[in-house]
Length: 269
Figure 1 (spheres, rainbow, N blue to C red):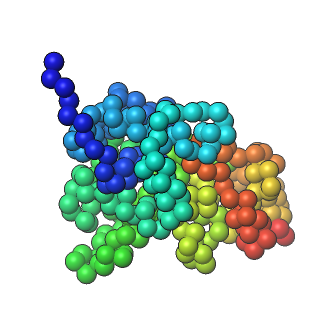
Figure 2: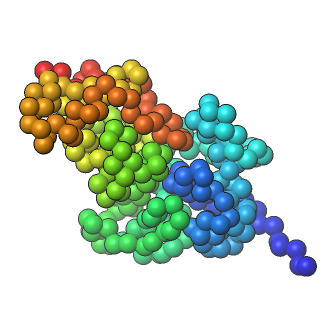
Figure 3: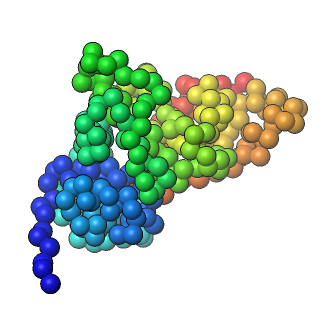
């Protein structure tokens, strides 16, 4: 039986693997996942090697470690260094990793590469079209970063609104806790993100609801008064005082970001 030639884990391959780690649920890190098989083939790797690398990254994830989920021990020093760099410098590495995955599927920079569910990647035309050849490299990087942030946040929350449990991806928003327009450095910080349905995102963004120190939903007086309308109350009333569903990987929401939201965005009255 011919031995398969071992392919070195380059920085490019590690970044693509880490990108996938952020977008695939933990239970899908196996060699039967067709998306893992497809990406591995495009990288010239075996499916097993990519599946094992995703499990190596899981062993470095603080949420998994806190829960006693070990992943696959054996993460290399390069894995650890890249993991730390990814967490400390998301503004550079998230767009870079997204661009590398994009280029694995298409060289057309006006297309986007979307992860669908947990087992398929498709090339799509963005809803907001590119400006064309005049679009700068910086603008493309912003797009790649935004796309990564959305897909990673949705995957971390199992593609469910953390308040209501709505699980239709087209109705979900990767919401920023601290407004990214005021804090551009927090734009791609996954700890500054929540997965919310469109209506809960709008209420959170406008300060009509917030989360307390225990991640419980707090409603403003404006929303409470709206409970007289029975049709309207079903969107918010059942969730007041309930703890949100926390992400299953990467990082819990930053308590300091939530404190900022309670202090500067939330409108209690």
